[in-house]
Amino acid sequence: MDPTPFLNSFRELNDSFLKLIDSLSALRGLSALRVYGQSDTQLLDSALDVLMQNQDLERCSVYLLKDGKLVNTAGMDWAGMIGLQQNRDRNHAPLFASFDVGEGLVGLAAHTGVLQHSRNCEQDARFERNCRGISPQSMAIGSLISLPIKASGETLGVLNVSHPHTDFFTDAQERSLVIFANFLGQMLVNNRLLNSMEHLVRERTHQLEQTLADAEALKRRYAELSVIDELTGLHNRRFFFPESRSALARSLRYKKGFCLLLLDIDHFKRINDVHGHRQGDEVLSGCAELFRQQVREVDVLARFGGEEFIIALPDTDLDGAKQLAERVRAAVKGKTFQIDGRSIKVTVSIGIACLLDHDQGDAQVVLDRLISEADQALYFGKHSGRDKACAYSEIACFL
Image 1: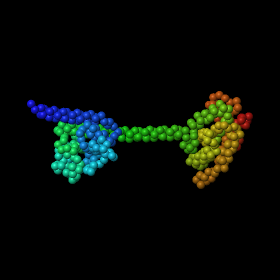
Image 2: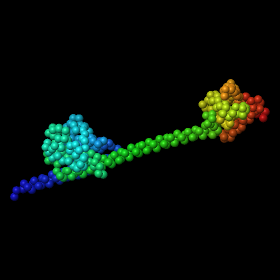
Image 3: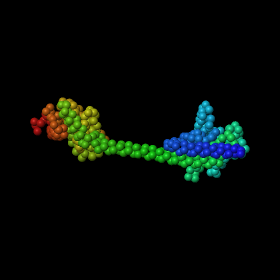
Image 4: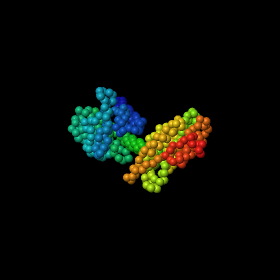
């Protein structure tokens, strides 16, 4: 009995089995690809790598639909895979880099949504149009399959696979390649969706960060407004008390000097009554600027209320406080305010109170006492003719 038919059948069965294993391996490799944060080209390049490693192919490529045309997006051949090409470029554009839908095997696959199989490219007119006159012999292509890449009924592009031999691809390979192409189409859609979501998340995150930054800036602005006097731009009482209390606590701890100046613009009510409140506000702002020009960075200057201002002077003794008070008084007296074409001059009365050597205890209690003493010295100066700087320690015996 001649065993040849049985051997041939066994070889065919064995060959079919091996090709099935290759097809399943290709699908398994495709499913193992990481689909996240990649471009279409990166994903396709990885997919073609898997296909080439698990299928007996000479060349494969993918054309994606872009603006109504099929554009080559990824390509690979066996020589490049095994390193025979000196400069391997997986994403090189072939001689036919794009096709119209319906043109050649690639275009027909996209147009019909059906696999196109050229078993003998040399004798296939579709291949002639496919390569625009390029000889199949020069490209070593005997068999070519173009498969539409679909997802949810939509054609995304075309997968091309080729081999130098004619009649190379079997029906079983066709079916496995269709599964591969459909699987690849779903991965493309998922990848695009993930990228779109990632972009949306980045955009929304950026918007949220910007909103939080704006909110923080607004919060800081409101915080600033809550301690800034809107008219003069100086700090207000809310700022003055914690800042001056902290400075006073340091002075008490380290036995340093500390003084307070309480300032009041003389006859300010008369300015408002005669010239109006808008003009009075201009005088307040102008005086505030003069005060600001005279103090140090470590000093705490604030509008205390109405036409009253207060300055806390850390590391300052009575002589230093009196010198500053005189500079401030002289600066205000020497200033001429131009209001509605008229010149206005004002003066300021100042009360001075200073920390004593034996002072100790709670800083807030000491601060309240200094403010009270500066207030008494201020009104002593007003009752004595105004435009004066009086120190509480020097006039206490007259009170």
